[in-house]
Image (cartoon, rainbow, N blue to C red; front, side, top):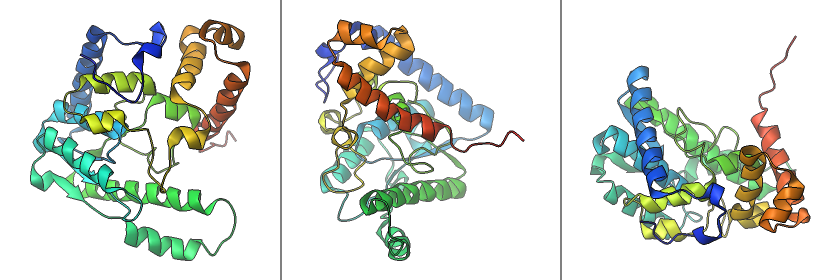
Length: 281
């Protein structure tokens, strides 16, 4: 059932492993809930930005299964010079596997609006210019998706998973924004297990290292300084198993130093999730 992916499922503790029956139930429930949400909201169409990465591939697949391929717009939003041709090809393979009609598979390069804004903003010195421009790219993509959704009377589908939300590994009002989040309750390693079950997702997507692709050579785990597998073990043990840091270290052979590093990164997520702060008086 499971295909080879970036993660070795054999290294996952039992509480993070999903059996085939569980995956079938999760997929079925998500498809049903997406349909119900659209019916209740009075919408029939969805739009999703696909990067050639796994999160957007899973979200797109669930959406197509729920609404039908004719009702889903698959959009690539490359920044030419940074977005690799492989990523573009992988997104196209996904669209083909999903039987997306040609008129529903759209490519909108974002170089021009991003460069126009960055030409002005880069004059203001401070912070990491690489991250600042990367955030501009993420927000430009979401701005485009929401405008497209207005034109087509569609709902923007989210692509954020539980691990990245907990770590704050997202751009505020960029990839964080959406109308509905299909996969936000799944840890990253669980999402890969789900993806291995979804036949529409190409092997190339299953096996690539996670990356937002906001600059050349960007790798999520390298940038954050923590790996997803250990992060999922630590955070799921705290949130789901309700066990202490000491017990986590002992049971899963993760050093206290690594655990503290993961929890330090988690504080960024707590800050981002608290925004905007709403005055109480």
